[in-house]
Image (cartoon, rainbow, N blue to C red):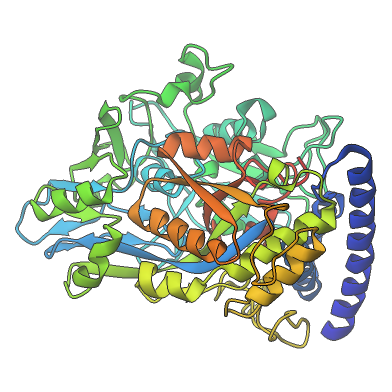
Length: 578
């Protein structure tokens, strides 16, 4: 049955993809656009989010990844793991496979348990959990806010502000959650289910401009909710169906379709509550929704509150006595150094000024690996290169030619050299976007060929791992490029790539490796480096040609890696459908 479903879906999606490409090619001839028509992809993601047949759903997700990889807009390099250093004697810190770190239950063997000194990254882009879309921001959110559920040290989802598990209707669509008694914000005001109703509706509101709003709702062009792609059902007034009881004790919400990863969402930052009074008291909040968290002292509900913030230098978080689990919080203070300079991080760590750092200089990894303080943890995510499909790099090309250009670049990159010489922590080379070991949604592993699906190349990915210069040249010729007899690009058809990356010695080293890989056939790659905040916003706005990208999954389901590329997603850096 699975094979039949897969074959039928393959046929349907092939027709849709060919139709989509035909429309896009026609458009390219008219207005010069080389970007693929993304209508069929958006529709397919909607089907994935609304179907209740888990085997058919897996087949649809494979089809969506096929469509994404066909564009060449994403160039996966390797699957993430998490490198960090932690002082001997520091214990009790933990992280989940999505890269979120929890510091509130840690200890120090020397008895100095009141303070943890650490460096995760540079100045955060957002501290409002509804607006954040970075891994370091998610870590700050997890330690200063908390939702209905959270993760424990073993990676299990457990009640936080919820009194227990949800009560779920027989059709799997209606959830009712009872809140714990006596919950408070950090300023001592009551925290109730009404705060969740407000916060979720705020995150779903287009005026909030949350990059993650698509996790809650998708709107049609006329502003109405699209039930095929929205998590929540419409309450009948065009708003998501979330309602707190009059006494604020229970929260009830209705989904459009049963959601297999719903509990993970309820532990994710965008589903954490924010205090309406504080949000709307901030000057300019109508046009700057995150204004209320722009400085230290804002109201939160997590284990810590932000006491002091020297921008681009340091942050001091202190224990929140009104946190629901304050009795078990061990560190009274978290002192963050703000820096993206991994050389400075390691120097501060070696000088005894930091207990924990989340990065080290690339050329130090070989030596540091011998230290018991050097740690590597599992992650679920993919380090990749993203192409802006609207970039002038592809100007004048048809959709098919632009796709082949991007695919050609992928065949030139020596991923094994990147992992062996730069990563150095046994990362797994990637030849598919959805990471290794991700669930298929019904008890199996997604990126393993089975009776329902066989990957195009070698049965386990989209291309062979080894560099294939001949294939790259073949594709570039089909895209209209000319080559000399010795396999170098002709001067009449040059290619210059502008590659954007943020700070970090490993990111720069990877860029330099690709620069050498492309140069072997005469492609010129210029490396441009930006600070973290500027980099995040330039990618989001499409102010780049080719950029360093990475995505740690928000929950263990392939749709999380796929829905970010919908035309309505705030995380669609590749600008597909935009």
